[in-house]
Image (tube, rainbow, N blue to C red; front, side, top):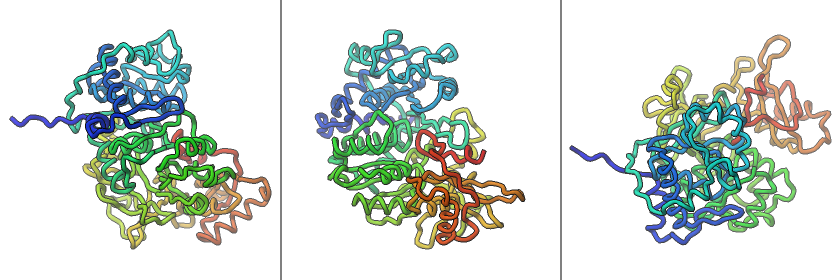
Length: 511
C-alpha cells in the first residue's frame, strides 16, 4: 500500500530558511521588535506547544484577531505546525460580524491583540464553541497571555505530518457583496503563489525588503507579507496601524523597503499628499504592486511619473489566495490587469458559460493550484464558484487582441444604458483622471422615467469649482469615453463606503 504524501507548509516556508543558512536574518520587523528566521522557527514551536498544552487538537480552528506585529506569523505558522487551522479575521469589523464568524467557524480558541479585546469581550457568552482566549501584546489579567504562555513552553515540537491537500488555514471573503464566506486553503497553496507570482513575476529574492499596506488577514496581504517573502528568506516590514499616506511614508523612510504592496485607494490618497515625493520615499524601492481592485490608468501613470517607480496592477481573490493575472515589470500597460502568466489559465465566458471572443465582455474564470477547497458550510455557493478546475471570479473583463485584460467591474455592478453595457470602472477611471477628483464610485440609478443611468459619487481634492463639478465631469467623461456613459448625477462626498481591505461597497451606494 502506497504511503500518503506528507507536506506541512511550515517546513517549506519557515524551517527551510534556517536550513539554507538564514537563521540569523531578519524575517519580520515591526515598529518595536525584530524577529529572525531562527527566532521565528523557535516561536512557532512554542506556539504549537502552547496550543497542544491547552488540548487544542489537530484540525481544530483557532481564530486570529490580531494586528500586524511579529506575533502574527508566530501564531499563524505555529498553529499550522501543529496541524491546527488558523482562521484569519479582519481587524476592522463590528462585534456583530465577529459573532457571526466565530460561531460560523466554531473556533475553539481566539488569539486577540490587546487593543481589540474590548470589541469581542461582550460576545464571549454567546460563543458556545470558544474555550480559550489568548491575548497578545497587553497586560491583561482576565485571560491567558500569549507572551507568558510562550515563555513557559518548550522550544521544540514534532511538526504534524499533514498532507498536501489538507486544510492549512481559512480566510474569510471581504463581504463586499454580502455576508463573508469562510474559504479553506490547503498546505501547498502559499508556496504555489510564491513560486508562480512572487518569483516569476516579481523576481523576489532574499535581499528584498517587503512592505504590504494590505494586512495579513487579507489574502493579498498574507501572500505579500508572508508567503512570498518567506519563500526566499526575504524580510517583511509590518505596520500594526491603519495605512495612511503619513504612516506609509514613515515606513518607507525608516525601513527602506524594495517592494511595496498597496491598493488603488491608498495610491490615490498618497498622490493627493504633497509630501509624497521621492525624497520622502525609499531610495531602494524597485517596484510597487497594486491589487484588491482595478488600478485606474491615471493613478498608475501619475505614481510612476512622480515617484519614479512602476506600479504592477493585477487581480487576485480570497478564493485564489493571491494574484493570478498581472502586468509584468517589463510589460506594463496601465489601465489593464495585464496578461495571463504561467501557473494560471484564464477564460472569459458569457452568461451561458460559452467562451467569448477578444473584444467581447465576459466573466473571468481562472484555473490554478492555489484555488480554495470551497466555502465552509455553503454548499450551493461552493458549487457555483468552484466548478471543477475553474473558479468563477465574479469579475467582468474584456480581453484585447494582444491578450491584455481590461477590467470592467463586478458582475453585480455592470448595467446597461440604452441597451449598451456600461462599465462602472471605466467611468470611474475617466472621472478620477480629472485633476479635481481623488476618488470616484459609479452605480446604476433610475431617472424619473425609471430608466437606468450612471450616478457618480466623488471625493474632491479641493472645494474650488465644486459648484460646477457636475457640468465639468459630464463634459470630461463625454470627451474621454463616450456620450452615453457620462454620469447623470454627481454627488460630492467626504468618503466612500469600503470594506476593511479597501474595496468600494457599491451595493451600499446603490441602496
